[in-house]
Length: 589
Figure 1: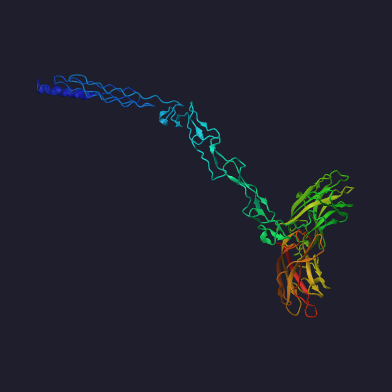
Figure 2 (figure 1 turned 90 degrees about the horizontal axis):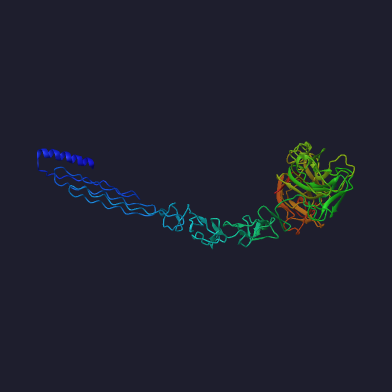
């Protein structure tokens, strides 16, 4: 503005030279230079006009710019008004009025409508807050403006409305830790028993976890029975009454097969047990690992003598577990071990049933568990003549408890209990399936005067087969004994008959229960028409004991028999030919 004034003055001088004495150009007053103050700062003053030399009265300078509105942190001041123009030859009017003073900022604890009013910039719950107080179950409504967690059982911001649709959900208040309170842990949220997804277990109830979730109780196994409407079955008529993978045997569902059917001795009998290499075998009620009874071997003259149990003769994988105890000797802690003896064609071998293959020190009166996973097809101590494709066979497989101390002079009584034998690979349980070794071990004949031998003239594969001759009754049959544990078996074998015409042949299951001398006959397989002189395969699945066996039946013997599915009198109205059998297989199904 000052520069503009100088230019006007120079122009006036020139005109005076050209138009002397006229003085007709008015001088312009200087524009006011004042500007309104910044927020909370006083506005500037307008600049005065400059007198024009020799001219008419100069116009007053323009008023200064209005002061800007003062903007306080907490309040707003009004801007100053524009200054009036100066009179002729007078200084221009004053600049804009002083800008309005800003309001003072509000301190924590004072009321507010927005964060702009507060010195900290935070306004919560109508109060200036010292810090950010966002989030559920918090409050700043206090004299110090401190953000605090809402006390338990309060809800100042209505963050936690009750959730009646969820028994474990919000209860309508905060929990005192900055979150909504949920139904207390262990609150019952489902009181009606239900079945698990597999229908093999019962879930008695469900309870809140305190975090809003209803958690089912741990399932309780139905032990093979199917779960229905929140309850386990208690008896079965067929496999449909059992959980998946289980089967019905003697009105009880079986889900885990233990081939040692009398391994716990709770039948009150010694069925399946024997004295290995001598001694006196008895049932003991004085000592037991589980239940009420165990087996004891006394009058031991040799350290290797001990209680024993017959196993399937087929070579394969087993998981075996047995508990054993001794009652004292001249050694404080004799070494005991569980072993399997394999008696083959011309050799005998021993496989240890103990991790590491060593014995364990056995303090007197202390039950110890001897267990191992064994594979009789790869164990280096099993000789070649035990393998049926050798040719070879296993005549017997026997688990027994033995004492390893060579210097012991007194052999204490040995006890065994809770034996379990589990086949883990589905191998053939028959140790003499193809008769290439030339013996009938494991097989027997029943009915009439029939005899059992090995034929070198007929074979399905290889060079030999099992041969039953001299049959005088159609019920004369070839039999193979099975383990005593409740199990489901798949039987397959090749048969041939030497008659002049075709005959009906079938497989027949038969069994007895401990405590009874009755021999029960199960439902036979579907009869197969076997042409004379031709090999025919018979296959069938059997459960021992079957579903309709007497309740609680524990097997004392079980067998599968091959016989004629025809009636009549041999030599009169019915031909009773010789029977041949080869390549037999019995596996757990």
